[in-house]
Length: 286
Image (tube, rainbow, N blue to C red):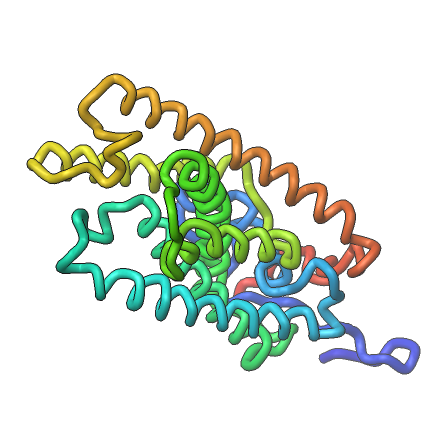
């Protein structure tokens, strides 16, 4: 039973439904080492709180919630439904063939998951209540998707406006080739989401899968998505793919450095540097 100290109630003991050390199995613990070992409430702070507001103020997490909800609805409605369905029968290439649309889907899924996590923290969960393992998985998936999308959308934006864009760019064009990247840069600056170096081993699988799908598409007698730069039938395409993957890895580490700089700048200035330390001990098994 808790006792009062100096007239104040001591902070509740943090518990989790299952110990963090057993979360996810060996594969999960290898790739998501920090996510498996950190107290779950610390992960919550990293994924739902703003880098410009302390958690106890609560306005930062509420602003992020509204932001994420609006962006999620926009990318599902405009990015996918409006951007794909009208052109499904008339487009030269089906929408899912384009790397741009793979990026739009990843952005939409990221913001849906981020919104769910934010809604749970802001509207449902009390800070010191126990949390189930589900929220550790969700936080890990959110971090992974953020790392993937912020890198992928940046490269898509650079490549499209450097090599592909000609003439007028419609709403769905801007959505796929600029807006997603802009939203994720805002997310990078105003959230506390981390970039983990070892996660590049996982995030790079996504563009590799797109390359494989593009090869399968072209060699089943379909037109390439990007005929001027990536036909998948010549040596140039091989070099473009290799250089693109190298750029993906380099961009991942660049954003890792940016995230570290953000944390160093904001911790202690906009929120307490030791915020979350009250949870920094092993969870108690039930």
